[in-house]
Image 1 (cartoon, rainbow, N blue to C red):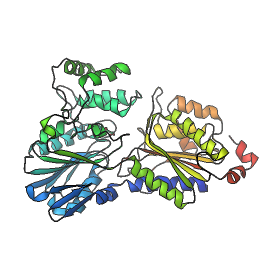
Image 2: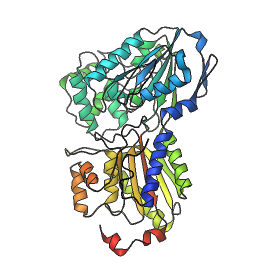
Image 3: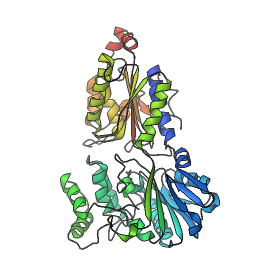
Image 4: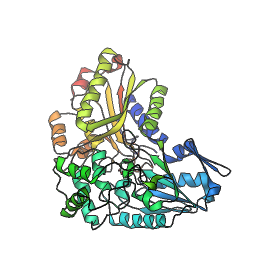
Amino acid sequence: MMIENRAQLATTDARDVALACLEAGIDAGHPRRVIHEAIALEGETLHVAGATYDCSAYDEIVVLGGGNAAAHVAVALEDVLGDRIDRGVVVTDDPTETEYVTICEGDHPVPSERGVAGTRRLLEAAGTADERTLVLAAITGGGSALMAAPAGDLSLADLQATTDALLESGADIHEINAVRKHCSALKGGQLARRLAPATVVGILLSDVVGNDLSVIASGPVAPDESTFEDGRSVIDRYDLDVPETVADRLERGRAGAIPETPGPDDPAFERVSNHIVADGMTVLEAAREVAAEHGYDPLMLSARVRGEAREAATTHVAIAEEVLATGVPVSPPAVLLSGGETTVTVTGDGTGGPNQEFVTSAALDLEPGITVAAVDTDGIDGASDAAGGVVDDRTVDTSERARDALAANDVFPYLADRNGLIKTGPTGTNLNDLRVLVVAEPSAADGRTADEASRR
Ligand SMILES: O=C(O)C(=O)CO
């Protein structure tokens, strides 16, 4: 993965370091690397993240799943297993060439007609599995939108309207997926139910803070403890305007008129095991290494940052300022790293995303010597075609315009005008956000002329 506009950026050393950290983090999380590290075939024994499966016990090996990175997982599995894979279907928005697994294209973050069609093929392929089938379930972030299977009398339009409302509400991914699982014929362990009695090996790339299996891509092969009642209370909590059919389904489910998604005691999971082969830490560790190689003291703050993006930015900047001013908790030159997933409560109608809002908010009051970059590792921040942004103390000329852009949730054009967007295109992976704050040595920061520093 190359950051597309890297050469065009008016780079300083600090920007180069920030972008190198981002690149290394994203690359480290690519399925071509993580699958080869976690999975191997030795004779008839398949090793998956420390567990073993005897392939000779099965008549066929099938790859099924979906998510932003699912096609790349499928290719990497084909590399490892070759023609031992008999067939498969994955639904993705980042397709690639495969030999045995059919790639169906869908759309993200809002489900589409082609995603529904692909998911239908996935469910058909699942329907023919039996006790002699070994299913490798390739599950990655983005799967909730991509694997769209409207439940009961719901339509695609119902799912689209509900997704739009959820994504703009500021609800976290646990809350969003509690609703999506109860509007789907596949999510919340229902794919596992359909696959039983096959043996199912979930291979997951996690973009969910805390790695809750039932939340990653809405847990198609994981037991689900969320309920119709949970889904309904999310709608109430955020006062969401969802279609009548959705409200009605959640209400009927809550009243017991629709069966719940399968929980941990459900026999559907007797032959299911799930393995997380990469998560936000995978990305942070690689970024940390690159920061150190560039002579910076790296400090990982947390892989679990969440909450409103612009507020998280203020806290990150405060830590960077402390580093610059007092060398606490690390001496500059230093690189602060964090992962997780921030959200945006959308009230305006502009273009942007959480990482772009993060850096714009950070730029509002940035001291010379601090550079801030943030991306969504899947390359798609919010509903824009940027992965995120990069800023320093020279990005904001008058803070009023930056504040206006934030108020309108319209930071994409604001950053575009200031050479502050990062574009990667689809990256082949999806492991949450990565934020990098480069803090220069105080002498380097002080070295900025008064004129330069006052251009804010
Ligand atoms: O549910 C999804 O699709 C997500 O991106 C979280 O894994």
